[in-house]
Image (cartoon, rainbow, N blue to C red; front, side):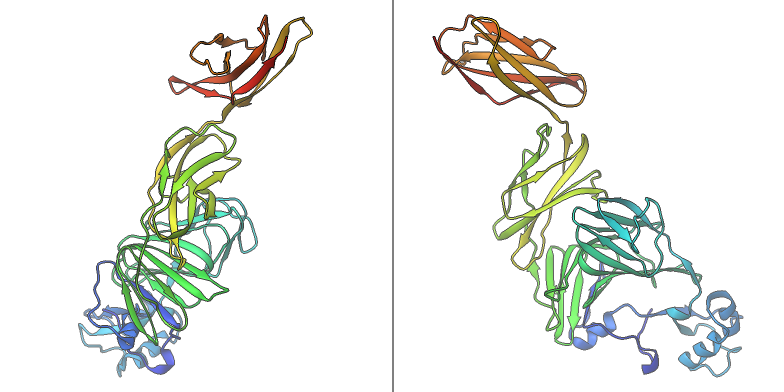
Length: 444
């Protein structure tokens, strides 16, 4: 049981808008008054047991020599040594003794800084740490309890609180998205635990849910997209409840109205092996989308994001992606800025190709076809040549020499089409990539 019914001197400043992620909870009331009482309290409730005194509680669970007196005044207790058994005491979190909660860097790539320094995988971050991601920068954090936060490119966030109280080992973590976006997954919390993710105009109190939070500093607008659970956004103008599959765009003037999140962008032929110089995905966004956010990660949970593209074209291109197995997803962006759902696809990156050219040979009546590999590893080649318009009757269709060139003579006048393929053993099979078809005009 928690409450914020405190004297004015102990009441925290209430932000302009409050977002409460309810998980399996339900709201019994609506309206501005209920919006404030729904916010998770800055108090933790303790039920008095036989033999308890405020001095015992101070030694075990509180900070400071004057904590017992402060708790006595706060709970209107006249005798700190004689407290009724079963009485529920309200203990302000700021008076609770704690140890730092372990919030560790799970993964990062690209330009990322924590307090102006490059992070290290596995490093713990301290309260007050400022995290910044630049263009093509990504970072994710995990807690020992299984919660995670990931920040994409061009985001800025601050860790406001990361504590485990001595009282029942309750966790209390608060993260603020100052600009950009953050994606949060939090398993079920114990009573009294908090894992808050907010923005300059909103705070999200989580209880077993998955959602995304974004803040645009220029427009002063905060977005909340509910993937699982329920979210209530409230300010002085009222309160709005968004259930799973809906989002809200909150401003200083109001919490907004629920908007259904767009369905996932279809990534056509997403599972094919990507062999080209540029990794390309053809996108089919749903109706209502004005843009798409396409991301590539090393893991299916997208805690190790390595690339991202936002655009209105129905194609997403990625350069400089090294060989390996990856996952791709694409979310549609509505006119409101809310991002929708995404399907996750696995694919493999295997750079393989060939560049080829033809020139007259020093030998009479001969042409020299030459090629160079594109990619890594041992490569075999194939060569094909046919008269234009007659591909069914190949004049040459054979494995090409490993030396990188081939001489052909005796070609009759006319127009020919030719091409070279690169072949490589790949996971018990052969991967074969044809280069572009080229024309050769032979005159008399």
